[in-house]
Length: 308
DNA sequence: CATGCCCCCTGCACGC
DNA sequence: TGCGTGCAGGGGGCAT
Image (cartoon, rainbow, N blue to C red; front, side, top):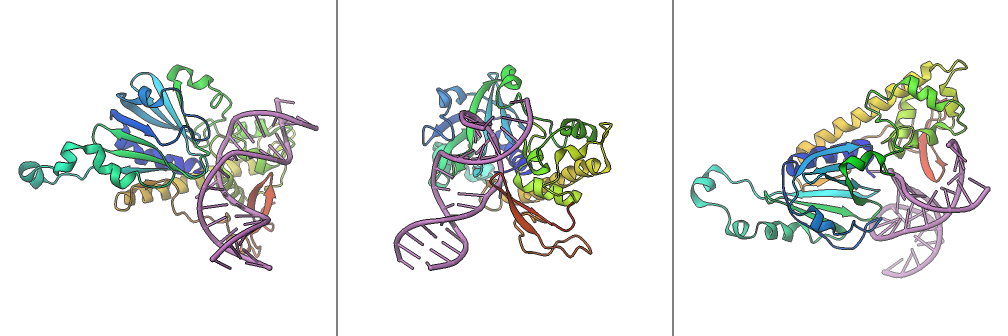
């Protein structure tokens, strides 16, 4: 899936299309994704206005005028596609007028281009005539409807750790939660209860940048006195740097998406270690070769020479 | 409690 | 060409 930077990029892409908009129609093409859709899903969404679109960890949160929150998780392969009605030029506004097909059936027009794809599972239509389609090949994603006041108590959210780009993540925090842990750094950083939003790619990237081995014991982030160490500071800084860099790259993709097909999801981004098994380490003067190894079923890419 | 493993699902790249 | 294998950015649920 999209990890935190990709979800944030999707959020920024959807925000101008959805926020302030009333949902005129929501349809599903199957009864479930990873989980069954909530009871009366379409009916509960129709007519509601989306008042805000937030992100928490890898979740998208669409706040609804009725007080519920539409929670969306993209799993491994979830994407959104936006199709907006053609912008009317000054000429057509004053003179010719909108295309008759659009005027009569705004939803129908975009339906023909947007809904014929395999694995399009959910289609949102807004009062402004935009269509937002959720596509998810592997269906590990899901959607929930949760009462806004109950969000923090929901089982999906109550155990989430701090946002990695927020103020709550700092070396003292990381040192304190790492204390006495038996797990290695790879598992530690993948654990959403420790930090919420990192995934397989950005854990590899952050560990590389910090020069720390994925096999290092998490407890070594803490000194005997419980104080954070230089490597702990470096890890926090690396996490921030890697995520911010990816979000910036996503932003540049966003500027282009309307020129292409409206697709929001993964984007092209250069990774320094991820997917680069056998390639030379990019750290200056390091003669190492990027290796791959499996940690609890997931590939880890790292430089055995400069990550200690 | 913490940790590790299996599994959900589809598609794709690879070797034979 | 077809088929089998392994792998893919997540994480819930369960056994230990």
